[in-house]
Amino acid sequence: MIARITSRWLRTHRAGLLGWSIGLAAVSTMYLSFYTTVALDRELLDQYMEAFPPEMMSAFGFDDIASPAGYAQGTIFNLLGLILILIAGMTRGTRAIAGDEQTGSLETEVTAAVDRREVYVGRALGVTAFVVALGLVVGAVVALINGPAGLDLPVGNILAGVSALTLLGLVHALIALAVGAATGRPAIALGVTIVVAVLGYFAHNLGPTVLEGIERFSPFNWAYGNTPLADGFDWGGLGLLVVLATAAFVAGLVTFPRRDLGV
Amino acid sequence: MTENPIVLEDLRKSYGRQEALRGVSLQVRAGEVYGFIGPNGAGKTTTMRILLDVLRPSGGTARVLGTDPRAGGADLRARIGYLPGELAMEERSDVSSWLDHQARIHRARPGAWKPYAERLGLDPSRRIGDLSRGNKQKVGLARAFAHQPELLILDEPTGGLDPLVQQEFHAMVREAVGRGQTVFLSSHVMSELEQVAERVGVIREGQMIAEAPLEELRGSIGSQFTVRFEDVVDLDALARVPGVNKVRQVDGSVVLDHTGSPDALLKTLAAHTVSHLRAEPPDLEDAVLQLYRGTESRPEAADTLEGSLS
Image 1: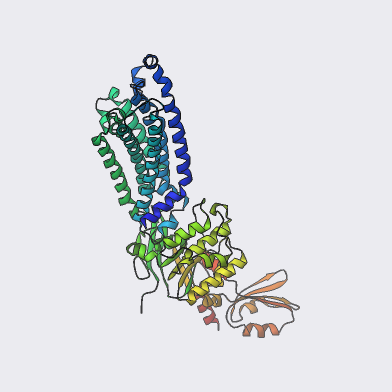
Image 2: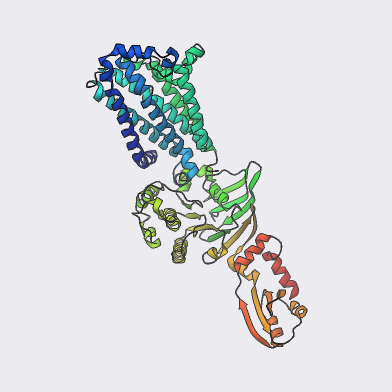
């Protein structure tokens, strides 16, 4: 039954998946293509960037913007690609339970011969597949454009960066799903997740200037603290992301069957 | 003998301080059509959603097909066909793909819904979001009937259906009962239940205020006579005729509410010159409205009144 729930959920979201994939692919292609221009005059870009206060550069993750890894990180993995994947994941996670509960369409699934946990797990798998697919789109674009744009990132590092990006998206999507499953309130689910994301983002990028060590609590730091595009897989960080995603998933699994639906 | 398909005992449900159900007890017997009637907000939907384990009761017990809805889980729901009162579906899906999915998650074969969709005149190729309210209701009905469940729980099933489709729905209900299925359906309009329900339970503000076979409810209300006299008539004397509950004058005619045998009334009328006489069948709507108002003419009360007068 779980597989049926998942495939049905993905089927109803295939148009959305296609749209987000196209958007992500377009943005990634566009920004990464610019690197050919950047690479022509790295020193100029470095000088240009030095005009900004270092805190500001740090806040947007623009450290080392002129290196191939730094550029891909600063434009896609820590900025536009990340934001798109976060938004897509959070909104899907919010709607998968709480949103459908509010519109009422969840009721026709939970009143069928399906266990409530099966509905939750099935939809969680759907959301996971959705986010992973978007991560793969970014990975594919980076891999394809890697040579032509002159980035020349090692394939292993691309995989490491895509894993980190995907898991970041997944963590936030599953937090939204779980809060929605626990409360039945899409506004709360989305609100909580946005707060978690914003705090995490700035704790990683700006946190150290405010409070030493605060960045260690940020999922963004677990993902990008060890610059995967430059240095490859950071298994410890990825492990922490998996633990947090699993914890969110379990929290929703435990609370969802216990409460009244659609009240 | 096995337990009745639905057994509710002192069922309660509160949301914070608001009490939606204040001790509902009722039994739906195997193979019957039970009509659950009450105004909007009386607790019909809340009761039904507890039976499907969408809501959990705050007190009392509910047993559906011999088990607690919560413990019964998916296996129990495979034996139930449910039409939600506020039916919402995947707007972007087409009817046939959605109903196939629903059949599968009800452990039926895909396409099991087709005969019902056809009978109700539903076009399976349409997009759900483009359907009118009545057509959406047909999708919901096809979903509930498709797997031929032992128990059908239908919340306001005829809402939005045109009269011809309502007739077809009534035929589907009768056939279901003929196969041994049990039907528990709700409405806020008595006339919708009149043609299908065998027993009726009336709920108001979260409490059952009456429960009776439809025939009995009908009998307890009696008829309304409108009489135009050519001569002078003593209204007080008319009011004392056995079976007459109320006498009033409307537009030069005399209107009498009457229960029981009309024999005594007709003999009294025969002594006068009557230019016009109309006897209207019992209007269940009125009867139930009286029950809603709560005071006069509960079925038992009407019976005793009649007994004491004859």
